[in-house]
Image 1 (tube, rainbow, N blue to C red):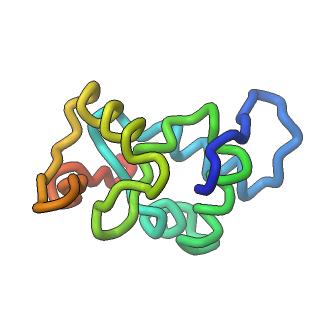
Image 2: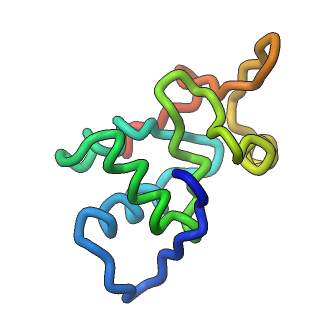
Length: 112
């Protein structure tokens, strides 16, 4: 996700893959996360880059912070907003020497 300014509205004319990605993201519970690859695997199509592209173009109205890199690092340029959302939702975090990371082992959601 580059600017997270995209909008996801019911009935919007979105490509089917984008609609599927956004629907999965809408279902991730507060305090839980999926990686970009998890979303693609759950859908059985695309890959992490395609999921990221959907978020960059259309993800502004979904909980974009609940989709993370596989190593749990916060999205560059969006760290402060994401960290505020994680703290608000009680997402498990790990504090490193220079940065926070989502604790993937504890926070990962499998879609069920």
